Amino acid sequence: MGQKLDKNTFSLDLGKNAGSKTALVESQRFLGRKGAPASGRSGRKHSKNSVVDQKAAGQLESHLLYKDILLARVNNEYTKVGQLSQQGVEQFPTEARFYLYLAKSFSQSGNYLEALKHLTQGLALEPQNSEILVTIGNTLEGWGKPHDAKGFYQAALAVDPANVPAISNLFNLSLAESDWSFFPNLPDMLKVLEQANTLGNPFNILSLTDAPGLHKSHLMHRDRSMQKNVLKNDKFKPQVPPGEKIRIGYFSSDFHNHATMFLLGKFFENHDLDRFEVFLYDLQELVDTDFGRQIRSNAQSYVSLVGMTDTQAAERARADGLDIAVDMKVYTKGCRPLIFSQRVAPTQVSYLGYPGTSGISNMDYFVGDPVTVPAKNRRFFNEKIIYMPNCYQANDNLRPHPDVIPSKAELGLPEDKFIFCSLNNPNKVTPVEYDIWMRLLHAVPDSVLWILAPSEHQKKNLTDEAAARGIGPERLVFAGRVSIKAHLARLPQADLFLDTFNCCAHTTASETLWSGVPLITKPGEQFASRVAASLLTAIGCEDLITQSAEDYFDLALKLAQDPEALGQIKQRLKDNLWTTPLYDSESYLRDFQDLMEKAVTRQRSGQAPKHLFLGEEPTSPKKKAR
Image (cartoon, rainbow, N blue to C red):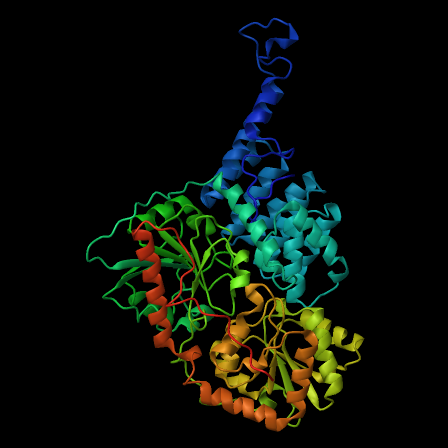
């Protein structure tokens, strides 16, 4: 099967069959068969009443029905996908592709058991169908069985080593379990993605490569493919409605108790309502929480786009007459990038969600700062950069510090050891960082590594990887996933946070610094690797930013062995909490609104987007010597 329309890939082989021929070409092939109306080149004469070969007609009918299914899926018409696929199963019971898409419709509605039943039927018809194997993996993953899902991605690659979704999803689930067994094959797997000109889910390889140019070229290729199949409306005439407020729309699936919303705090509530009208567009089913209700009640408009196709959602947002539309997801969980590909506002902005370029030609701006996007790195974005003067990341200075900090014993930590900490998402950790962390444990015998490990599979893998580096299990302390409140309460028990490289700590870095824990980072080229450096710069701790793996090791070793130096940094973090820009929520929002207004004013005057700053373009920040 050649179809690539899958929840974890962004290629759109719309209207293509297994042989990668378009529906039109395939139809012509059917009609050119014996018994069909053929061209005059054969020299044969045919009666006007000649009957089209029944088999060819059936194949054509099947093909056209399948094309309708793909069209419905592209448009997020999942009910229609299910209905058409059921029709296909009944009319063409020997064609596996209809079982596949019927299963996808059940999976979309959360009926994973029914989905697996139809996938099993399809696999019986085509045992070597790698797309069915991948979809079984997706279904198991959605059902909360990621370890089982991983096996089906591996099976798909055994059948088809160039299956992009299988590679992308295997990366994701393997990293989540700290299973690094694929690393010897990583160069070949990345080469497959490069040759296919698609990254699958781009988020899944951020931790594996520091290659922002590759991301940009592949995502722009994806956008070119997408633009052939979606409507777009970029004919917004420059105009200045006299006395009207700027209508700004935020698109997200996180308007509830989500880490992004906790970063933002009262961001939506505190907009200057003399200048702005705030519209919220929800991309997922309503999650009813107290915090979510507070967010929704403080917007001038809240609209759920659930159940609408991307085209319908775009039309609904356009009807509100937005001046500026802000995509807070792009390619992260719950995203709907096709809405923005159709342009819903004269000015469109990528903000806070996906840490890199969208590649979407209709995305005008990306919100960054001088550290995350220095001038030399603008080439990695198809958008123009809106430069926040300090840090691009919003932070809520009203979030409470914990009233009670759990004891080390309650957290399973030793009382008399130095606590190296890595509470980053496991997907960000690779053998490169782990090698350094194990070297630190060797160099500092009275130390442990406190690391996030939510699953038993991950604990075993981390223990085995440590043993292979000469470190015993007693040197590892595993942390589970907890509520944000509990997480903030436990963080102060760490002595030093060790960051990951290609995709560093983002929200976790903000929480760590808020908790008074020093963090060492090593930025690379891509945005995802530079966020923690931006946060450290904004809180006046640039000396915790290192430029090489050896510098990173040396600084971590020095601070672990020099309590006085570590204490001075902790005191500086405490002192700078209220005197530096990082947690100045009020100034942040003022700067953000001023820059949004600049972008809108520019569009209204008929000018093309350009890099925007408050005042003159700043020079690159100087690094403090350690």
